[in-house]
Image 1 (tube, rainbow, N blue to C red):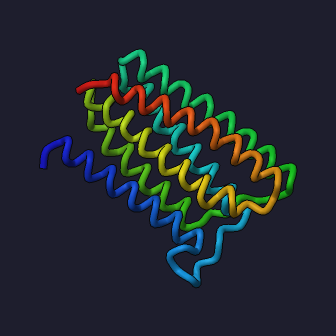
Image 2 (image 1 turned 45 degrees about the horizontal axis):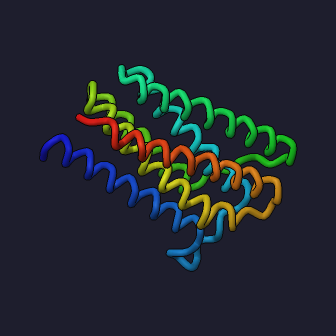
Image 3 (image 1 turned 180 degrees about the vertical axis):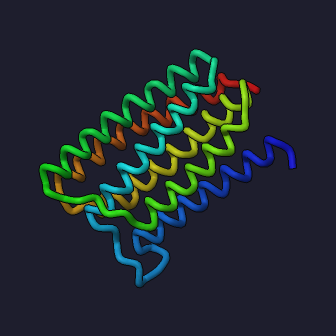
Length: 184
């Protein structure tokens, strides 16, 4: 299997895993699976942000492309800012974010992706990073819109998630535009 085919297989597996984990945590696929609580939703959202920060940091270490580096800097900055707001909110509300199967699946998959991408260099890395960012934001934005925001019971948490969704949609659009410019 060629490098491009391996990357596509990994991306497909990633999207399927995240979609399945999100669906399971929302109760949509299994009647016995409860909808996520606000504490679980907070953990999922925070975890997704941390994972994108890690991917951005990896891109800053590996990429030489100015546009890719600028995008990675934006991801690190914006996701760190949203996560700071999330931590302040859960502290204010006295909520302890609760680990859950969706957060665990996101983490495991992201660690595997970071490891696979660490073997790539130059334009191959840049292209894989940007494609991953498009796919990651599509998945996270879909989970925010379809599961996490509707499932949030606390109004302040719901507002923070909606603010995050607006920002992350911008990230997705930026990543989609960048993917057209980054060539192997």
